[in-house]
Length: 190
Length: 200
Image (cartoon, rainbow over the protein chains, first blue to last red):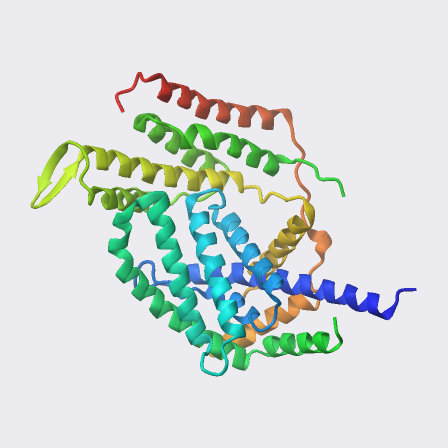
């Protein structure tokens, strides 16, 4: 017969893996939804696919969070067919760097930083790393000419994403359910 | 469970073997032919070709490189000089990017399965993703969050039957033949490029 602690571990592993897979699938799905939304300007994306990354800041531990980021990057690479191209390197560089920065900010944010602030800093980190990679790998220093409009568009879209994340975390029943479940698991010492 | 190679996995192996003759191609003419071949290959395996995307990538990367004058001046547009070396480097980098995008699309066209625990997690992600795409309905006005919530709860409550996952298709002799021919074409291009017979 399985001991209660073993049962807890099995339940925890199952729910965490399912939770990560759901969030990763949700991210892929939102990137598809965003593809269908008409854009006022080319390259102006809200970055809806980053919503699961933002909400998981409050749900997942750091290793789980990194696993989710990795799944998002590889999943998008597979769906868009960019897995073995330079675009994948840009995407991976931008996503990993911004995710680490956002996680650190979220954990040490206090009450002075909302999702909007975290989203802006994350987007700026991602855009700067992508520009740096573009400089090193493909475009050369000429790429910095487009840096100002690129960063301005990133700034605008990250505000929109941050506001949407604030709204989602305030109104989503699934999010509050996931947070409560985590608190219970933590309380149970799992 | 033992990991078996199917058609999608063979495409990944073939694609990886196509990377060196394409990335290291010294001739612009051969690279252009190889790029068109890779686009054809992706289209033949069901991927959608976006001509506008190809043109935008080629044009934008070439244009950025033209900002840095390099080599013989081809023509002058006001104070701006269009130089031969910048044009060649820009086009080569643009063609590299376009070719690699379509090579990637060819490689992942059969939704390959990856080995190990991470591979299983990735498969699970795609299972949920396909469920989301197939069950998505346009939300009513002002009910976007409720719609997303319902979808997330549905997945969590196990509405998915994981055994529905498709089986990897069996490899046949013709699969090996087609993939070998495609590979041969890319490597023949590499030999032609390195032979020095072509002007560019």
